[in-house]
Picture 1 (tube, rainbow, N blue to C red):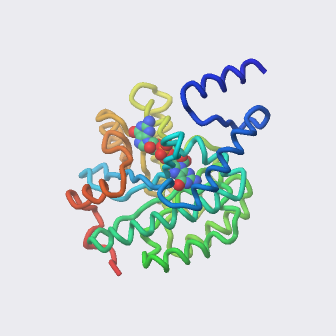
Picture 2 (tube, rainbow, N blue to C red):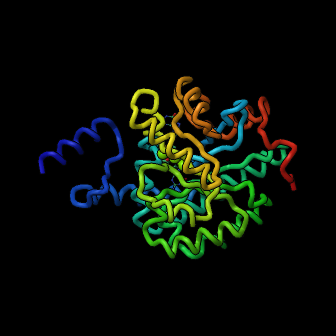
Length: 294
Ligand code: C2E
Ligand code: MG
Ligand code: MG
Ligand code: MG
């Protein structure tokens, strides 16, 4: 297939990791990625987290952070999560990857707590994880191990994740919620959550996908979607976060619409843990001195 061959050639030239969801041509490279990922999971250092702050729109103070997975491949260099998480999601590797991410995030949170910053950190969960009945126990074990209160951990799930096998996901989400962990709907607007379904989910935060935020100051259609998402979230008693906030004009527009929290390059790019420690030292968070530091 000439088109696909061209595509693969282009990606190879660009030095990117070649694999696609399309099974046919790319199966071997996909296997390579998975093999390398297994190896990366055995050692430590190749897989690490960056953190991006979320700011309150009134006052612009840090409300929490999102942990974003990074893979520094020994020969390919830094591989973005979009280039290996989809492959891992097709296998059980995603569960081990998620365990690693939770472990890294909670260890970092403990360090920040010891430095006086009780800062909520969000970890992204894949669909596959929500189908795993063992997830709540894993989360509880890691919280205990790292002595981090459940309230400080937030888990982001996408709408599509929750729509897949609704009953099974709901049971896992409910148990996570019962632990005291906070839940967010990520990339809101890109999936197909019905309002009735959203109302029944034990979530307390809704993150509007960055594609809508990006277009809101130039495209009437996107502006309407952002406004609708904010109103829907508020009517359901949820905190509303805008992701992908890149410009001051977005901040102004989001403030006018009553959005609660913003995250994006306008404020800060994802950064290493040490850099985040410095930022926290400098500016603190809205929770400092208010949350229990065990
Ligand atoms: P996401 O959860 O929606 O994360 C936000 C993504 O948007 C991040 O990309 C972040 O770097 C990027 N971003 C933040 N602000 C801006 C902005 O102002 N403009 C633009 N253009 N982009 C911005 P990243 O780190 O490449 O992550 C991509 C996706 O990979 C995430 O989307 C999430 O779905 C997934 N992911 C990342 N880490 C993990 C993880 O540990 N586990 C799982 N299952 N998925 C993860
Ligand atoms: Mg996310
Ligand atoms: Mg998101
Ligand atoms: Mg997104």
